Length: 324
Image (cartoon, rainbow, N blue to C red; front, side, top):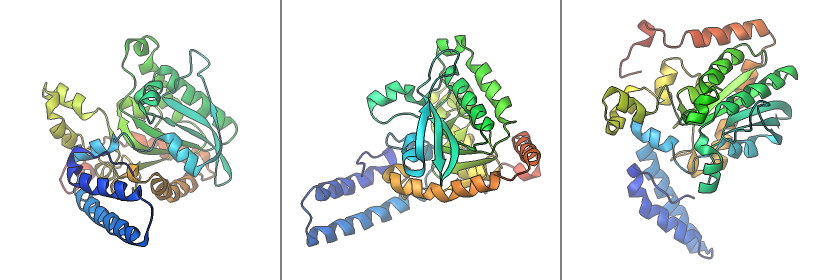
């Protein structure tokens, strides 16, 4: 169990230390009872805290350093995963991982951002900031999936596309725009899962699909709160206000038709139990694949097109009231 706490979880730190210390001691019947009591107390405290998170606090949870990455879910939900590399034009981008796998015995293509676990991995994965070659690798393998009639499962978790000068030189905007067009006409089912940060075009570049699932404490927005605050108020310190204004939580997005389903997380967030987080995702993912796998390709493509054309539509169904 991770002992690292977020700024709003300070009251949990003593409990977590007690649980960790007791877990390290030899097991006895008395210690088992005490451990059970402490874990129950921890669950109750977490439930209370997480039942009333603000949008900014949800941003912090989505960025938790121990939050599960794409490969954590692949290891728990898929079998026979074989990673494939390179865009066949420039290089292999480590921030986007893709490969063939089996889900419930059926072959699929898995694509997604990967931030990495420890510091060495995070540097290797560029903290999930994908470069143009990452998006080109993704669409290359999605087309391969289409050729072999394999559904595509996409995991989204990135702050944004990499904004460095080399990214601009190699055409990151064009690579993302190209993916948007090509993914909209892929003839195989595409299920997208927002597992952490769904940041800007960096997320959308691999997030055009038939069903969009979003984990309970993930976020999805056109810009990170800090960037929004810097543009609107010339003050990145107003990130808390920006997080509220952006309507980036799962509940906000479901109410506005941006996503199709909210996937529950363990009490305290997915980082508290990777196995439980994967188990909670398994059912919705299976149902989404079945729903998206209707045999009529033309009807599927029409629904996908309409789904994204309707986003951002203003009207009575999309009023900005606090009850949404």
